[in-house]
Length: 311
Image (cartoon, rainbow, N blue to C red):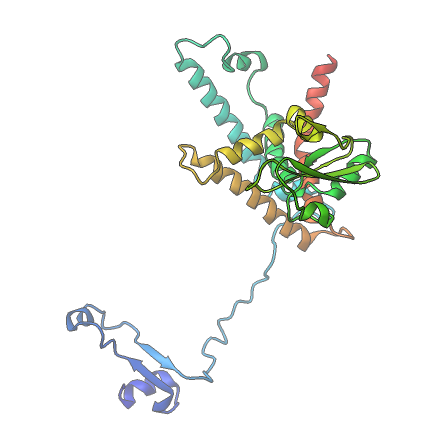
């Protein structure tokens, strides 16, 4: 315990029983000698404690600062984090790396993808924004494929076939099917067809949804699975490849996981600021916000692509 003079120095007139100096007896004498003489000692305090910091509290305005206008688009919030200057820097470094890589190659194979670089030319800002939109959309397709999405696409004249995760809302017949090996079950609601199929015992069932397939078998499996495997696009193919070479395995390109993770965090942070600042009523959901962001990122590239095709 400290003597009365030490207690009075820090207690502002309180009694000795309010404070207890922690002498640090657990340390050696040499360790204690290394402590500067003017070092403040630690006190054990007992509630209720006097508010010594009443004049030092944080008084600045909290919350988002320097935000876009209240009617700004999702891409305006996203560009707070991934700025146009930073995007232009990425484009410059991408083109510089590609040029250095091609120059260092003494011989380019006949069917190498490097030949397309000379045909297409350097990467542009619009193409880089389009590439980022594809990266974000890959995660969107994976996490938001649902019955409601299939119905919405059908209402807009777009047919759809995809896989359903077990945690999505669906009839229990498909969600928890009782199936034997090579057995499948179908249910339909209008144009929407759901299917669950077990390839063999010991494996989890596969769940699919389609707005144009029929309930029929092909090679002992649902025909919609064969159609899906035949016509699936780059997004689903990339998902399948990612599952085969998942991020949990060792790789020399760890930077890819880091960069894409940072991009998704930028989207989340942009959405948080959007909810705090927007005048939209009602506010966009996170899904709708991300979809709108993807559309805006890809818009310039798609316009240029359509113009080149017309020419």
